[in-house]
Image 1 (cartoon, rainbow, N blue to C red):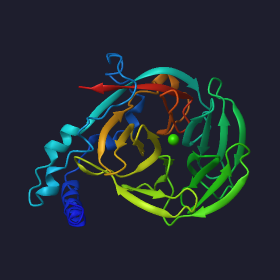
Image 2: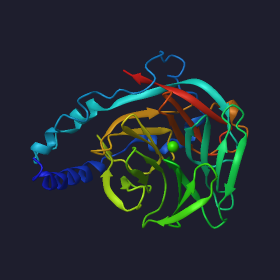
Image 3: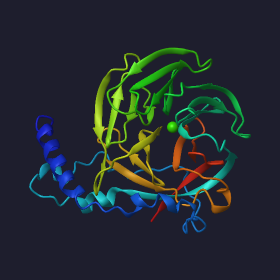
Image 4: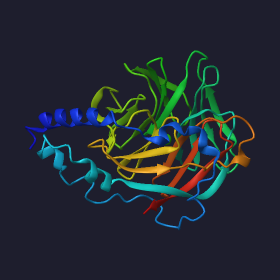
Length: 312
Ligand SMILES: [Ca+2]
């Protein structure tokens, strides 16, 4: 099976390219509808706090891999994708001037990276008040992107400058710069490797010490490649990826790149909360110790603790 994997991958990519021509995902163009309350929000039953993908999603060999001439895999793949809506557990204030690009909880606070030229920063934020406890600003020529903390080091990407920064997570002292050939969008880690996105359908794995690339995964669902992967968060063995300019988060199997679930956060920021221009959903934070999941958005006045609710 291993020896024929490259051939099968090539076939799979060809199939994906073919299928992508038919991708008319309507939600991709509905970023402006986020102020509309989700009709499913109020009727969603309380449920388990985090997704449990079907146990067969990652382990069952895909039929198309063994049958390269038959593109009949779509219905099977669709069956394996679990859809979720959400329930709000808690609401916290969020700095409405923070163009959120990276968010993570650690030791009772949020670390947040923000973007925009001249306004990019790295912060520690008190969750209950939204108060900024510590902040450094990036040079005005840099557009800050995702952040992650691995050990005592905090990594921050920039959008188009192809440079990232490594800081001491406590002091924010700059330890080193590193360089990558793509744009920088989101970053997280799986406990061993850094995982980066660049706005395409590719996730890049990097060694946290050498920062060398050590692998890639192409992300796809039943409709084809899933592009515009933005903010990332590693959650219980899977990668959550915010899809830029949508209210959707993909749940991705890191080994295969296959999307095993979709979460729709439409309506989470209600119309009455939008008292100034806001941008899109962005910022996913998961506390592995408590199991809490948080989301916010760029320039959003609120940050939400949420629970995922499976859609039947
Ligand atoms: Ca994050």
